[in-house]
Image 1 (cartoon, rainbow, N blue to C red):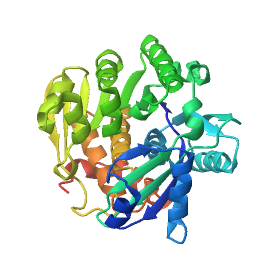
Image 2 (image 1 turned 60 degrees about the vertical axis):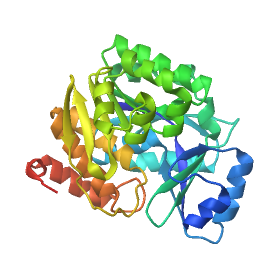
Image 3 (image 1 turned 45 degrees about the horizontal axis):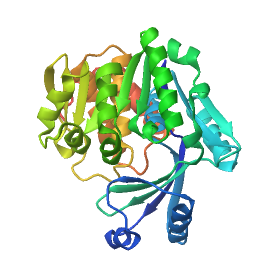
Length: 334
């Protein structure tokens, strides 16, 4: 089983123009944490526009993608005792995701307004809400101990209580030989917690994911290959995603290059990194080697950016399960 602790968020997806971001004072392509007033402002902006809603959150996206491929998964986090919390739980049940979400009446369920520009770049504005209250006592120790993989992201470092929960889970993982997967998740998070993340990577993690910008901040180096080498000295498997140029994976100090498996011009990049992580973990879960796992990750990321949103339809999920059950994907050139 693969177990994830993350921030369950209702995603509110809005198509915008470049000038809209300027008018709203939003830095394109990043994730900003916002307060209640800012959330109300963005919701008012979205009125009258085409808006779609879905379950989100970086770690939940990864766990949901794994479930769509038939992997036994469970997700944990904190939601409010409100309508969005009910919707989130219902959706997890429909998707076959194990639910260890904890409810609170003190805050409403978190949400993210995702603004998508014509170039398919996403700018995320997150109201954490109940997520901020997830704490050490909410961690199901038995589930962490039983899991083969424990996955979390850098977004869990934004409150002391969330940090405490993750550190407790990491202690349990270490004591029970549960493999730890960490997605650093966001350049701003890396900027805030660089030293803490480097310590986490070297002391607790087996698999680490970063994109080129996150890796640049971590290692003060603009070369993704060199960043991958540097991160590979801190953990067994280090992955640096390099956008349209593919990705690099270091395993036991040996770096491999993984090609892009998808369109040159994406429809929507929302959740591409989360789904890449799901593909790699899927490969490791099924015993594939690192390069094969990277190919699966690249294929899945290439598939998700051809559609709107970060989750596959049930029909597409069935197609992908059948595809990876065959040997056809192993010889794919793109």
